[in-house]
Structure formats: structure tokens, C-alpha cells
Image 1 (cartoon, helix red, strand yellow):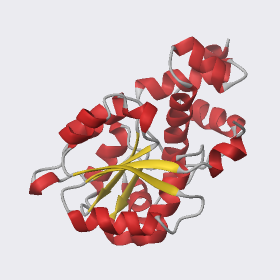
Image 2 (cartoon, helix red, strand yellow):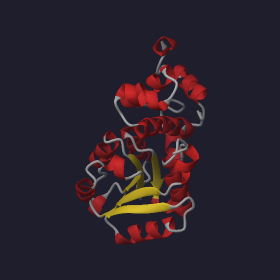
Image 3 (cartoon, helix red, strand yellow):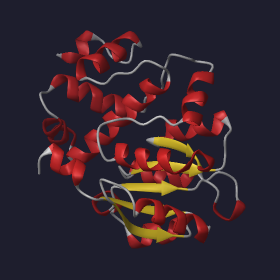
Image 4 (cartoon, helix red, strand yellow):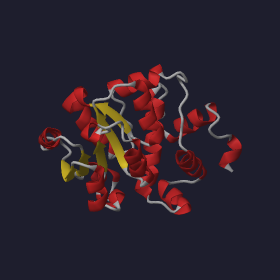
Length: 226
């Protein structure tokens, strides 16, 4: 499948949220989307999702996760489990606190959206999560700019590992073979890194730009490339 064909294929999403009205609203919005967005699963609790999709990254393209199920404190454990399973996660929450948003990004969320940001941002974020293009919503961007380490980003160890392997090879497929992960997982980690840079006003849309950013921040050195 070519990159254009992949971009046009229906994006398969799953929703984890304890409010039926949220499920209904998202499904209605996605029904009007182009390229199409297909609702693969709708779950009121994280346990239901993990039971239905034990290997979710192979069956679902993007997960929309509400952080507060049944009014509890932010469920960072579920986010970590999804991200560690190489799932592309959009946190979709009422919470607007900078520290919560930044924590979600550190744990591996691709995008953080506040529910009040509306249809356009959600649809664009879902489509972006299905490609290599990062999406930074208004509240996520504000939180990243308010970070005390403004201009700097925090990559996970796995994101750093993927970056170094990508800079040392010619393609994402070779990275996948070297690290024993799927090519889609490689793209997910690269997308997260790009989203983090875009969020602090230092976009890195190309491979060379991403390399320059990583070297500037001391994430890797030229010696790592050989």
C-alpha cells in the first residue's frame, strides 16, 4: 500500500469514555469525515478495551482516551499501558491543567485535546495520528509553551532509540527490523517526537530538521550516527 493509499484508508478508532453522549457525538462527527474515520470499538471502561483488543495496535489505528473514568483521578496507568503497547493515543479530556497535559505527553500520548476544542480539532488530530504529521491543539500548545523548560522537549527512552536507529539507517522499515517492532510503531514514535518539537515552536518536519533538533538538545551526538 502506498503512502497516499494509506492516508486515504479509513482510520480505525476506538473510544474509551464513560459517557454515552461522548461516544454518540464522536461517531456522528466521524461519520462526516473525509478521509473516512471508522469506529472500530466503543468502550465505557479501559478493561473492556483491553479485553476486546489485546493486541490493539494491530487492530485499531487510534485510541481516544478520556483520562477520568467515572469521575476518578487521571488514569495515567491506562495511558502508559496503551503507549507501551505501541498504540497511538489521543487523550480527549475536560482537564486543562498544564501539568496533566505535559504528563500525558511524557507518557506517550500523541496529542492532547480538551473536549471543548470541538469537532475540527478532533477530526484533524485523528487524521494526523494516522500519518507522520504531528497535531498540536490549542490547549496542548499552550501547556508546552508554559513549560518551565520551554524550548526543550523530553523524549522517552524508546523515542530516542528509534530516532538514533532512524538516523543510522535509510528507512523506517530497516529501523523496524533492527528494533524488532512494526514499521507503524516506528512512525508512531517519530510522530510523537515531531509533535513535541512542534508544540514548543521548533517544528521538525523533515528528517534532517529532526536530526538538527536532536543534536541541538543533546539528545544524541554525531558519534551516535556511526
